[in-house]
Length: 596
Image (cartoon, rainbow, N blue to C red; front, top):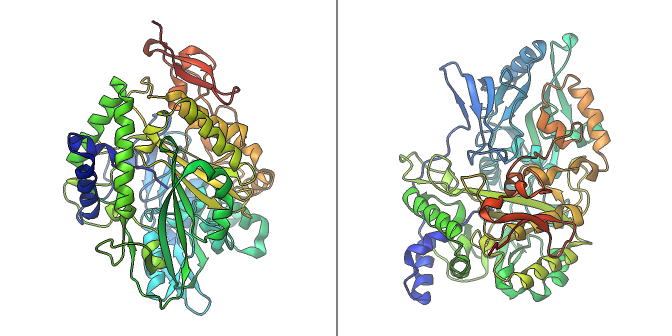
């Protein structure tokens, strides 16, 4: 999931020699701050009985910068309460949206249709219902976090084989958006493909008391494949049962290589290593390959992955980072961004990205450890409130990270050409992707075709970009055109599938046509919610039922709300005009044009 990195903190030290600089960064990265302020509830209500509410995501901002409203927020603590809430809303024909504990989805999936709608939060549907050791299954309520599922399964000697890298997601949330880890092995890296049973509470008519509980598995093929990735438009997932495996160990080594052969090697590398991924720094012409696979459970080692960007970070430091990043952007200091990107990369590599051999220090590769200690992390969520002295880096309550995120999957048959197109852009603009490298480059993860109707359509590689976003929606970024062109190359030239829980609006233009079974999904949607109580204008636009995914207005291309077709979709007053792409001539991007 996230690509946030703490790179710009290093500006405070930039007068030092490079060797000393990197040494200090390694020291900083090796220190784990164990106290942090966890994120707040994304729902805010103006009264003690949870009425007149607003909802946002954990970053404090949707792509179009609107604030979503609801008349009331409800917090069921068990399935019976959930059924009663859905029935009441169904009887009154009130719009419903489901919210999760942390709300990590970037698009407006959580927004009710209008201020009269209600929010049902799964915050307290957070219990592990059952672990069946003989059947190797775990049943959890939908508000259980990935962290809690991993921990509870491990106590019984069991493991979920493939997961996202961030454990702050809830099970219902990650299923709703098709979240995944990285593998081309077995059933693939998407968690929903290891689900064996789902209970969902949906709206119904008076004969069912206005709400109905559906219990789905492979015997309910069509409904099951629709609910596995549902965007929240079919009802409220109550419980999920997942298939587990006996606990196992992994051996993990990161290896840096020149990226000249990346396009040729990327597919075979994924087939050769079960938990492979690649972090790519195109402007540095460098790729970090993750050699990661199973080893016998009696292999010595107790490694831990406490991923550095997911650790608690000083709010004072984050404010300084953001101030400097804003300054670099406003002054056009591209060389400074590239210099810091290189230093950041060196420091992250030297600190093994947060890996330790024993949970304390990193002494060298390979890292050997149990699956539950290596598969996912997020220690900035794990501790007590400390008055926001330290927080998750993207916490919107403080001046910290603020970014766009673009994530899409490219078919393995086309990925070589896509990589080569990015390399052509780097040849034309060698410094054009330093900004992405300040956020730790491009994360490449492997995904397989899924049976879910809105799941991945074919074996593919997921490309994850994170990059600077201004607080001012009319402020262009440095090399705005390069990232926009890559986005359009991926989405439109190569037909990339956007991650449902990430991305800017333009990524979802025409997306429903890319899913061969969208008709089957919509058939189940009509069956489960014929009144559209769980739908909104946004979800209807994503599913191709309404027009209007993109929004045309001044500056819309800067925010990814549109593809520019006129200069005012960029910002001519800042010297940014709508121009053709450099490699993909069909692209329309906001380019800086010198008027001198």
